[in-house]
Image 1 (tube, rainbow, N blue to C red):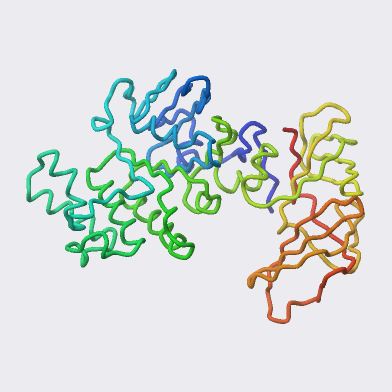
Image 2 (image 1 turned 120 degrees about the horizontal axis):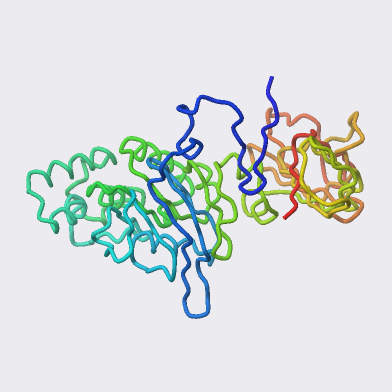
Length: 393
């Protein structure tokens, strides 16, 4: 038997009520020391604030993703970690050492750029070895470490080739090997898979996870791609207008967003506006004109009487059919306006009497597709009491 988790209203994370503390990830352990600590970091460019008073702890061996749209401040924050930009105010500590005044090349950090920035006239081996040779490391050690990296990224047979003789995915792995060969404590990756096509990007995501786990290096990845962040990250920091608006594990960011912005930015969501008509410690009822129904959610919230709120409901949580289900709450009616068959799933756009459009996704479990639904069919939409989340922000 499972129980509904308690949700932290600030972060949106599921709170652990009882567990063996030693089996928990570091960010859930009391007293665990962060490997990377960002304290009240602000970055101004003239009158524009790119990063606004951010504080964040990232722990050793994490693969942490900063997720946000263009202009959210994620790349500026990454550049400050690398030392390419100086904070207007605040502190950055890596492994307990304040980075103020420490030049980029003296930090225990390396950065992998979206463009890969490989030297076209150098071979794969020489590209990877470049930083080691600049540091004057012994030739035999350079050769050994380059070979180790080539094996790790599965490019041992291509060491003599030039970058233009490689595929996009292979160039990405060379850039990763070059970033890791100097054995940084912290690796920063700026949109690392953005130049790859969809299929190759999906394959490379798992390679990146395996390499990170094998080496135990802390990764901080900047991306605008929600699926990429959900696949890669141990935790995600969602950014908007220079602020981290939610930090949580991927499951909690998706299932328990702490605001309308997060709910709409991460994945697809239906939002019903309404007014609280019953607020109990373990449940809440919302009357929604948009839905044309009373919506029941089995978790409590902190709100004023009759407060306006939003109910967030993911499309895959909704059941759709022509027959009325045996429930009055969380059951609404509409007309199918659009259908998209996408192979593994079908997407339905349903128009309610209020004019509200609801998106529903259903997996295609069998070839006959079960009950046939088509354009202009009147249908019922229903969902369970634990499928939606009430948002007060």
